[in-house]
View 1: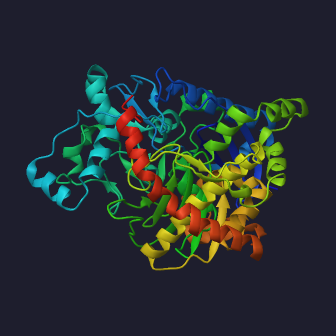
View 2 (view 1 turned 180 degrees about the horizontal axis):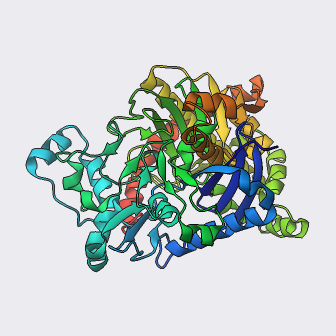
View 3 (view 1 turned 60 degrees about the horizontal axis):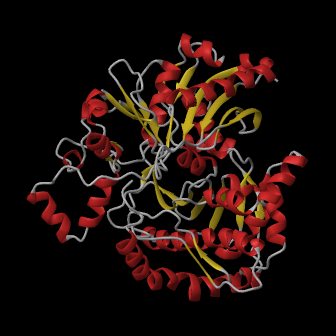
Length: 520
């Protein structure tokens, strides 16, 4: 009864959760506060007030202690995990200069630094000129410097949301190495800020002095300050350990530490990850991200909007389910299980390409979403199934790409994130991939990954491998149905795979004619 507990704070896109885990990886207590992901003052913008994140994080923590005051004395360490690639501009006094720019923001600029010929010509010769232009145009520091020069001139510290919340919790401005995902001058192979001769410093407007010190996973970021203790109820002086961004923590908590295990994350962004002790680019000139284990890398394929599409479906097509769920006091997604039961595998030929937001390389920047195969038999249920299947097809394509890059076949699938809570979606996943799909023992994998790092940092385990062995284990396993898996395999190979190549010229024409997606 007196075993130590670990506080994990998970600041996600749609909610913030404060959780207590024991040394066996069991979720002992949890408090959750739902948040507005962002506000948009113009189409394509996605921003949120920095204090809004901090206030809701504080509320989640205070609610945890209010309901579980008896557990508070047992907490020995904390760790923070957050959404990725959301950036904050701070002045010299660490005060936010503007709202945080959320990772869903779509602003671009054509006013970015011009590379000297001795850098730009080799990049073009390698066929990567377009990729570099995308990187420069999307980089928040570049469009901030171009569009908000007064704000950028005052920006003494340019940090990710994880760095800002670390500052609020500890009074020390630093960040976790495995949180560094974004348009930043980061050396992904060396897992540190880029060296002084790296071309990223010429491609971006940010300077080294604006960036925070970085701390490896499992090492201490600082201790909870008196001010933070007053706001959150977290004990003053509690050590806060480096953990990493939400996806990195999910991979860790799923036990997916070798390239033979693929981790699917069914969150706002859907991803397929393999973890490796080697540096393996998921595609040429696209780096793997730092894993939540020191010296490891996560090669990742992204479906940018992913399970955001479930929210899109809910908003645009599911008013009846939303109303019924309110009456029953349940989440609307619970009722969506019936939509899957009402539609057969393959959605009677309806096939969806889930590129509601384009990528840098795969899919290309011209990509758009598409749904083909409509007939008079199709209903909302078929559309919902097509969304779930389309995300699965895109991630299977990512799996096959990573198998080639790693030179190792994926033999096991772990599935985490909100979508994994659905038995029907888990079965669809097993059938699309033709592999057993297993859940971790807890849905709160981002929080558990943070807790694992807190446990290592606090010395409860000697290393990450030992902590993972003690704190993670398989949950439910879903076996593929041979007949359904064969149906999906044919649809994937004969319909989904050729679809992008056939439609890409039309996407480019749409972009040329309408200017969409345009710079916002």
